[in-house]
Length: 302
Image 1: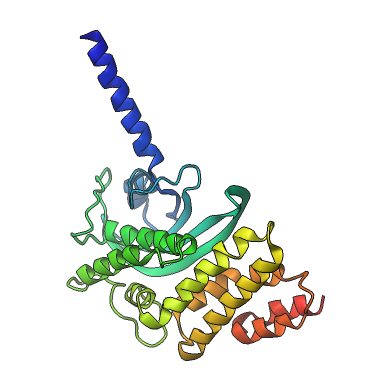
Image 2 (image 1 turned 120 degrees about the vertical axis):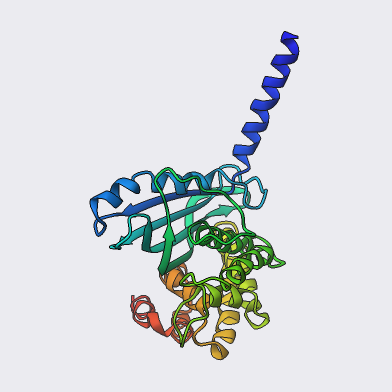
């Protein structure tokens, strides 16, 4: 009997270890409560920890990332409200991806996403238990679910040639569709060129944007990840990726996906080609990414 109990105990421990190893995200959440009343600060004192537990202790897609979990940071600024348990906040969601040399990590990372979302209203009580249920809309947890799926979709696209993030983006847009039947803010289509969760998820699944997602794979997996071992091939693959993105940009000048890409990558691109023999390459980058013209011009004239 003692041996049986020992075997059962060891099995539970092994299952627990495997479960923990299987988590795909390591998130850090920081909150700024300066604008809220003292009583609300008291209610929110465990909010950051609750969100980190909610994200980090969940199997989002069932992959074993080992030590290379997707690193996510969420910075939340709470706005003043008149209710003790109803909150309004803005959040910045960022993620990074490790870079590799073959199968070995180079101890370097590259930025993958950065979204500023200033339309997040939700209800939260101190000590509230946060449950995962993508099929039911909740203004607090559905917001987190949506962005974690977007983050993981981008990460999967960067490793898998066959648009590995598609199912994750489909799950994200399902959350958007659930939210559409509510009065929750931030889930509707945007007016003009404003950012919205609806537009981002919809765009990521639009047929005409798929070449951008393929280019993101080429840029990372066939470019940044082989820089050390095959530098010339890396140059060529990244140039092809940027040209593909630019071809789509001509028809979609307000693309959220393309704007996010260049906002995160412009310094990385400029630095990557600093030793490239043809300095005129920077003229191309200036054309592809006019918003960061000045940065490319600095490298051109070095």
